[in-house]
Structure formats: C-alpha cells, structure tokens
Image (cartoon, rainbow, N blue to C red):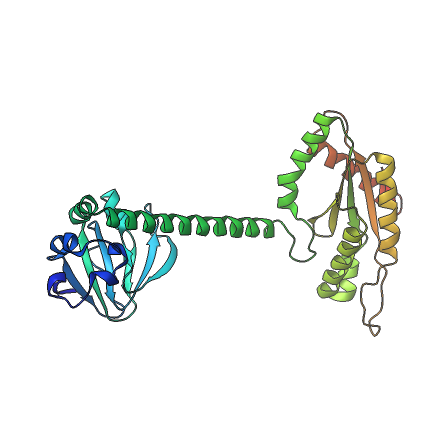
Length: 321
C-alpha cells in the first residue's frame, strides 16, 4: 500500500462519494484536502488497520471480511465499490479496525483519520446525516445476518437430533426432550405412555441378509412406527435395533392398543421390494409402560424395558406391560 497523493491533488469529485452527498463542497474540501490517497495492488491488504481510519473507495473495489473482536473468526465478506466507505464504526469507537480489507483489483482509497471525521461531522449536518444512514444500513445488514445464522444454527441443531439411517429422532433428542415431557405430564397430572421396541433376532437377520439388508429392515421398521402414530406422538431410534415410541396424553390401555397395532403392521411389512430377494418377515417385541405419579424419565424407561423383557420371554413378536 503506497500513498500516491492527497485528495486535493487527485482527480476525484466529492459528489461521487456517498459520505458527502448533499454537503456543501467548500466546507468539506479544506478538511480533507490533505487526506492521503492510497493505492493497493490486487490481493493486497490495507496494512495500517490498527489505526482508526475511515476508507472511501475512489477506484477499484475492496473485499471486506469482518472479524470477531475476540478472535479471528470470519463472520462475513462484503464488497465495497467506488464511492462507498468502510471503517465508520472503528472511527466512532476510536478503536482499531479489525476488518480484513483486501483489494479485489487495483484500488485507490481515500483515508480519513478519526479527528478529521469528527471535524466533518461538526462542520456539516449532511455528513452527519449520511454517516447515520450508513451506520443504520450496517446495523440492519448485521441483524439480518445474525438472524440467518440463528436459523442455520437451529437447522443444524435439529439435524443433529435425527437418526441418519431411519429418519427417527435419536438418543440426543430423547435426552433433551423426554425429561421435559415427563415433568409436564406430572405437573398437569396427565397420562404419558412409553413403548420400548426391539426387533426380534436381528443379529440372525443381519447374518442372513448382510448389514445392508439389516439397514433396510431398520428403515422399514422405522417407517411402520412413523406412519402408525398420531402427529402428537414421537418415534425414536433408541440404539441399534431398539426403538421407542412416546405417546403423550395416552393411558396404558390405549398405549397397549397402539403397540398391538404396530406389532401387527410390522409382521406385514415388506423389507425388500426386489422380488428376486427372499422376503423375510421382521417382527418385534413391545414393552409398554405408563407414567406413574411423581416418576421420572429413568423410572419410566426402566419399567418399559422390563415389559419388553417380558415380551421376549413370552415368545417375542408380542406386546407386554
């Protein structure tokens, strides 16, 4: 970055610069006459960014990558074109400009130090108004970017709570949500039932049809669970071949009926659509438990698991409570 002159010796006009739009030229010219005009080659950075200076692009373009004050995390890249400025916030804060400013092409800049900017504000209401308008735009743009990031963060958070193979909620989701559901049900004295499900003889299924076949069976079983529930119910992949169904506002009698219906549908499920492949039947054992007064989520899961064990001991492919 080299100084090639001052604004007074440059061919540029005040009217072309957004900051001075509507301002009386004579009031401005004498204040910025000695402000340096700097030249940057393509890809070169503004190297004196440790000083609070406002930069106006006279020719070319700057790519500006803003950084967090606490570190070097890039938060966004914008392009500053001729007539536009950057560094207003740094000047008003009297702090170092932490943005990384790089010439996108051969670029010439007008550099205005903080003291001169404050003199311009004192001398011209138009400059003050233009500066406020520019800052307002920056704030709106920053807020919009923050909202986009929050939405993106929530999207990835939700994505992290879905099992990639089956599309069901995963264990992380369960750990996050079930305690609150149990607490709400206890506080409102409302029923909440839980169904623990384990695919029968799944190791043998994997040995016979391979792990890809096992994955297909898990997806088929997950489809049965999802399609057989109300919108207010939840299906979870608990781990391996174990799944779980959460039934809010549901007592044990209704939960047993739901589990029985799912058990029957699973028996009828087609795992492989390719008729050249043998079509094995997949079945599951179901354990049902309904929340007791004052019980926490651990006790509820434990009792559903005990019911599942009874279903297995009773011959599998059945429902127990």
